[in-house]
Length: 263
Image 1: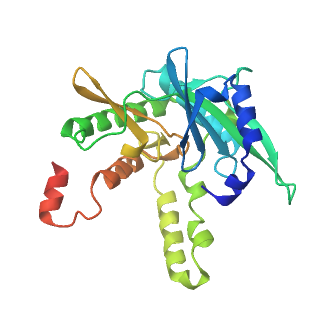
Image 2: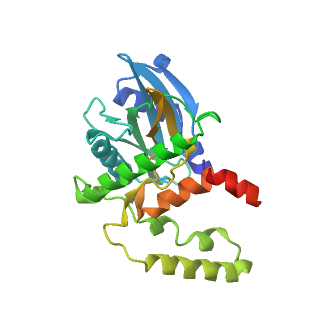
Image 3: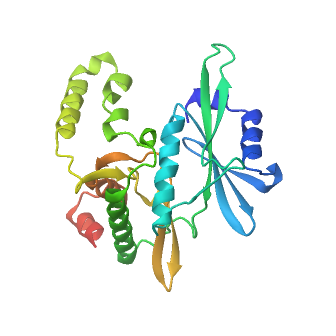
C-alpha cells in the first residue's frame, strides 16, 4: 500500500465507515489488505467483508462501477461477492479527507460485500477438478460480461491500458530509454488488436488462487472469485493468461516440470 494512503487513513475515517453501515467496532476484525484496508464481520448469521480504499487506488466512480458489475454478476447466478447497501441505501459510501499539509482533498470509498464461502485453495485442492472449475467459472464470467451494460454511463470501468501505458515512463529511470521505447511499442501493438464483443469485455484482470476461495459441493470443488477492484475492459484471454501465469510455477523449465504442470 502506498505511503500517502497510510498517512491519510485514521480512526476518524474508520469510525465514519462503520457508522455509515451501522456497524459496531467490537464486531469488526481487521484482516489487513494489500491495496485497501480490509475487515470482516458477522451480522444476522451472515459473514461480510468491509473494504476501505483510497482514491489513489481507484476514484469513487470506479468503485461504484465495480459494485455495479458485482451486483449484476451475483444477481445472474455467478458466485461473486454480493454488494450490501449502507444505511443510506448506497453500495459505495465516499468519505472526503484533506491532507493536513497541502490541504488537497481526496476520498476513501467504503463498501461491504458478502464474504466468500470456504477458504484459500490448499495444496490438496490443486487437482485437475479445481482447474476445470476455474475454467467453468471463467467461461460463465465472460459470457455474462458480454451482456453487461453499466446501470449509468459514468459507472463504466476503464480500459486495461489506461493504468498501464505509462508504467515505463513512471517507474523506469531515464537511463532505461530503450526498454521504455519497447514497452511503448508493445502497448501500441496490443491496443491496435481487434476489440470485438466476442473477445473483449469487462474481465477480472487478476484471476488466481489468491483471489478466490474453495468450498466443496457434493465433493466437487466450487470457487467464489473476489477482489474485482482491478476489473477492466480487456481481451478475455487476459484472464486465461493470468490464471496460467500463477498456476504454473515460475521455476518450471525442464521437460519434466512442464509435463507435470500440464497434468
